[in-house]
Length: 433
Image (cartoon, rainbow, N blue to C red; front, top):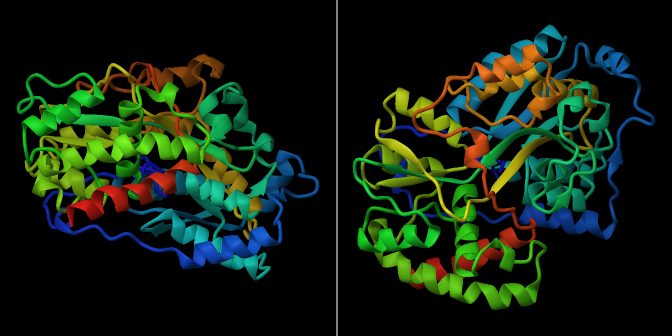
């Protein structure tokens, strides 16, 4: 998404300089269409839609895909991500006879709303063929039978995945079950300007203490923004004594017991935030703009590999550094899913397989292209394929993914996310108004 994608920041966006967008107040969107469609489809116990019965061999799928147009709906707020799809992935798909059309959305819920409405209407000629998705949106779609399932094992490039990788088997606690193909990994990361923060904190609670000792120099995006939402979940882990003390599956009793200290801590923090916590950046892009403009000394991201390019381009200060935390941070993966209503599932499968190829994964991992962490198990690659990853430039800003992901905290199950986002709105945002 990141930003998840609910959008990932790695669904989760490259910043644009200036502070106009950063100064927009929070707007929490409602989703009546989504809710109504989920309720209607859930009442009918909508099943997952299996892939073709049965799937043909891969050569047959490729042949059927030729001439198809695949509409990839994805968060459009990341210029690097947009450029990668348009300039790298789409031309490679064209060589396979598939036209890839990127459809930008402000929030992945827009794509899910469209799919659920088409599903409710019984359509099989929908407008969405592929979605960049993870987390709550994937779970909601599964509940409504919105995704085609059982197709990912047919992808030839699945041989490069580690079947035991926990980030790829579950999506925010929801079993993937062949309903989406992994695209890239993400690691929630705090970022700081070392020229302004010469002695950075080393724990999450230390970050909050630093913010209180330096009023106005820190803030975070307002949930339900993907990055703001994970910041609050990371805070929950911190005030609860660590991620081990928070059950991964949602439990109302656990929520009622664990969140009051969280809300109290974030209310205490609020007066020390940018604009005294009376308003929050609308999204991670707006926070990046504040950081780029020098209005705050820290930002945060689900896609830290993109920082190298942002520093090289002068968007972020040359003194930008990643802030490692002793207790680790939340990590996850984002995926590509095929809607049950797609009229061109073969083309979508070809694109998903292409996106997971060693060549595309290495290209996408280059900081000048997009800078996203690969989902592939490099030990499963041949020497030539591994060499492409080994040739990626070292970064003075971002440590390698194995270092960055050391001590990674698991994502809470998707059911936690809307509960925490709404709790933040009621108990933190409302208290400042």
